[in-house]
Length: 462
Image (cartoon, rainbow, N blue to C red; front, side, top):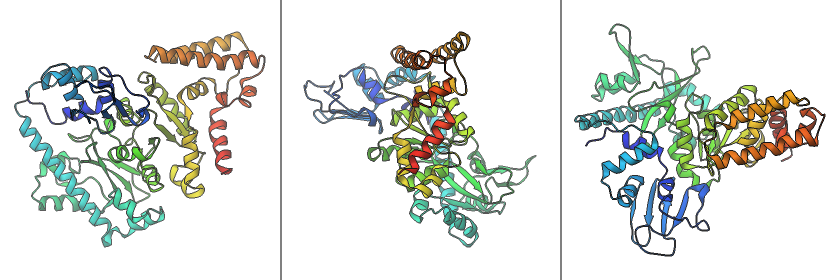
C-alpha cells in the first residue's frame, strides 16, 4: 500500500516517541531529563540492567548504545508488536486519531507534484532575498534597520522583499520554466477573475518565509510597507503544503535550540520570534495569524512539555490567554501543561528587550504563571464572594471548567488546589471582598493588576 505524501509527516508530528516507547520500558529518571524529552532506559531489545537505550523526543528517534537498535515511533511499534510497516502505521494512526488513507495508485505522481511546489517556494525565498538587497528594497531595509535587526538575524530568518510590481515573482518563476498552475497552487500568485492574467499575491511587503518541521519552505507571511494597505500582515493561503492551524513559525529551529534553552517560548507573531531570537531566546515559535490551535499545542508539546506562552499585557492579550485555557484543558496531562508570561501593558517582546534588556524578559519567563492560577483569575476577576449564592456560582464555574480535564489524577490535584484557594477566600478572609484577599495573595490577584503591575515592579527592580 502506498501512502500519500505528507501522511507519515503528520503521523510523526502527532505521536510522541517517549510516549510510545514508555509503554514498553521503565525510565531511568536519574539519567533522564523529561523537560527536554531526553529519556534513558534499559533496552527493550536486549538483556541489560543499565540504561543504554536513549530516546530523543525532539528529534523523534531512539538509539541503543548497547545493541545499536535505532528508529522512530513507527519502527519501534513494528519491532515490539511484531507487525509490518503498514500495520505499525495503522496502530499509531488510530492512537493519534488519524484516518488511514485509502490505497493511492497515484502516490508517485502526487509526490512529484509536491516536489514541484517545494521548488516554487525555494525559488521564491531566494528571489525575495535578492529583491531586499536591491535598489528597490531600500525602503524595506530602512524599516528593518529601524527595528534594530542585525544583518545576521535577517540572514538567519531569510527575510526578503516583494516589490510593488504586479508580476515580478511570476515572471521570474516562469523564466525558470515553472508551470503556471504550480505557481498558482502554491498560493504565491493569483489569477484575476474569469481567467484573466496571473499576478503576484504579495506586493510591497517584507517577506517572512515559513518552514515545515523538516525545514522545507511551505508559505510566507508578508508585512505591508504602506500604512494604507488593506491588511498590515498577509499570510499565504492554505495549500497542499501549508495548513496554518497545524504549522508554527520557527518550529524546526526552535526544536534544535531547546538543548541550550530551558523553556520554549510561544510568542504572538513573526517579529516577536525574531526579536526573541536576536536576544538569544532561540527556542521561540509563533502561530500564524490565528489563535493557538489544539494541533499546534500538540506540536509544541512534542518538543517541550511545559512551554511558556508570552502575551501582551493589554486586555486583548489577557483575553487570548483566557481562550487558550479552553483549548488546553482537554489536552493537558501529568507532565504536559502550559504557563503564561504576561508582558507589561504596551510592550511586546521586542519593546521590552530593547528598553529594559534581556534580563527583563528572562525574569517574566522564569516567573510565568501556572495554568491553574490563570483559571482561578479568570473565574474570580473583579468579583466578591461574600454570599452563599456567589460562592456556589464560583463552585459551578470551576467544576464546569475542570470537567474538561481528562486526566483524572491531574483533575483531582486541580480540585485540591482550588479548594485551598477557596478556603483562603471564604474562610481565612471571611466577610471580605476578594479584592482584599487579592492584595495579599498572589494566587488570587486581579489579572490585569497582578500580571501587569507586578511585571512592571519586578522588571523595574532589575
